[in-house]
Length: 356
Ligand code: NAD
Image 1: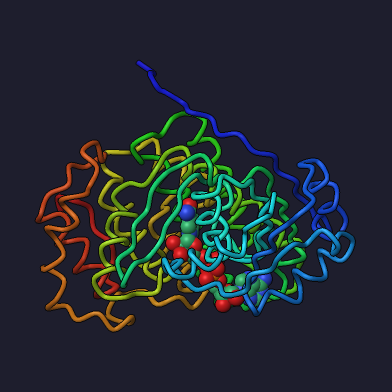
Image 2: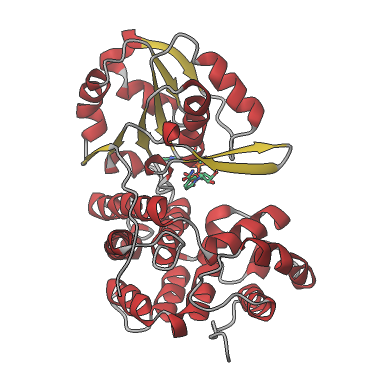
């Protein structure tokens, strides 16, 4: 019997090559903004300033002190910069969107987000902040951007390696959406289409990073991935990556890319419909092999050992993963199961199912 709850999220999305160049003024006008805080990291600042040329007189403040994982002191400085503003405009990757979210969380200011990577944060109500190395996350609709302007042209400059890692991270959002706690037919449909677009984009982006068609596929896939993740939530894969990232200070996107096939292999025997849909979207009957081949083609490391993790340290994080693993994962999450996933993912060996 089909039963589900779908908590739809609001938000306006404007998508298309050149949309930021031509449409941003209309979008800030729609929100009646007269005093805008522009947030962009120093590397994206010039681009952001160019996009704001037509309403430069309405920029009341700028903030470029963006740092990965939004340290609380950065959030505090951005909030101070927001005094007197009526809108936050963020131009940049997930760290920049995250800084805008930190401002919105305490001020309630609306956000217009112009993403330049495939992180997907711009369509989620999830915020994250780091205090002395410890990351805290939460969900609050005040941080969900009011408008997102997706412009694939802005992603042309994203280096090939970062594009691959960021795109595979979006792929993880889509795959996991099939069994995450708040999954429903809408999030699964969105995730399946996201996989389709992401795989098409990823197949060509590293060879031809300046291919606008591939960039458009990837950004559309990233939008769908973020939307599916926002609704379905995070499941076993994200929990494992969260614990690994915290314990060993690992790069976010590469960790996701390495772990994903192993969690898919663990769940596949008890999630055959999801596995078939993921395979169909990847245009290969074996989605586990397809994901591994894609990572290989993109030159992403295949094992956690390549990220400097010591195998002897893996067992120490098993309990932390078990403590936060979702209770309704397709394959029950056991200590032996988590240990098997971690050791196989460390070695980069062929992913195996739960009972093998
Ligand atoms: P990022 O924002 O840190 O950007 C990575 C690097 O890419 C930076 O050096 C940046 O300057 C550069 N960059 C960005 N756009 C560029 C472009 N177009 N051309 C060239 N360089 C560019 O990394 P990210 O992967 O976008 O975001 C990761 C962060 O987002 C993490 O903190 C993660 O936790 C968070 N995140 C949050 C959510 C959520 O729902 N809250 C979802 C996904 C990711």
